[in-house]
Image 1 (cartoon, one colour):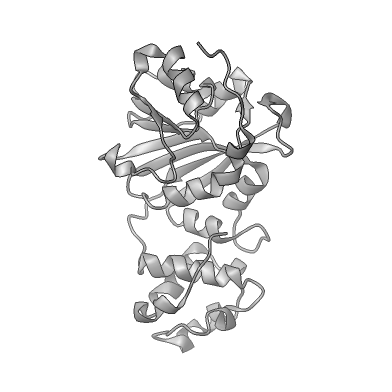
Image 2 (cartoon, rainbow, N blue to C red; image 1 turned 90 degrees about the vertical axis):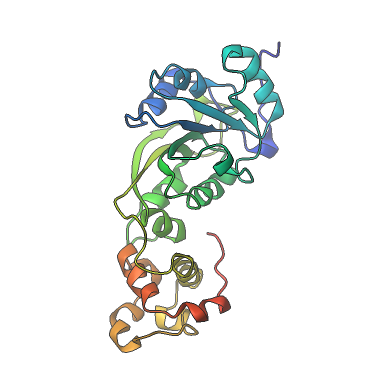
Length: 267
């Protein structure tokens, strides 16, 4: 049996070795009987605690075949729950037909992509507890008027309450990363759906922040407003000055027929 999984640089792997922190992360999952998906279990330091939860079923997904083989050997009674797959490409609807939660020590190089994937399933993913780079965690939890407030801050906060839970030092990982980490919790808010075209909302937010030095009247100059005069206050501001609700209002005032000319890039 393999007694150790080699951390692979190209996968952005930094394995947590502090069991107290692992337990604290798992305990950050708010009480629920929903199934949970662990993304990037590595050597299973979170997995062990997740398997001990009495009211939870779970799956564990890693793109590293060595990790999946190791977990199948260490937890043989749970063989079949360990999935060798790329979370970013996996069809989650094939695994979960109803609501579920996500947890993980997310690889830094794809943590934002993981959260964009979560945004594809806001009606199913009710909670996310993840360890990510501290700088990214601060950005996600930031509010309007701050320099760290950006695309993913707005898009996630449209659907989730975001809490910065605690900071994790570099010394508790193998190998130690060059940056500090942080654990965040996303909890689905009460907004069932946006009061605007959701695809257009995403494009407006991305377009606005990709030109964040411009006031919105210039950044969104090619958009077709139903009542531009009524939006003068919002259009005279820059992207980081608008709340989530402001972006929803702005998007609701734009004709979706003109949205095809805008290309919003991920932050």
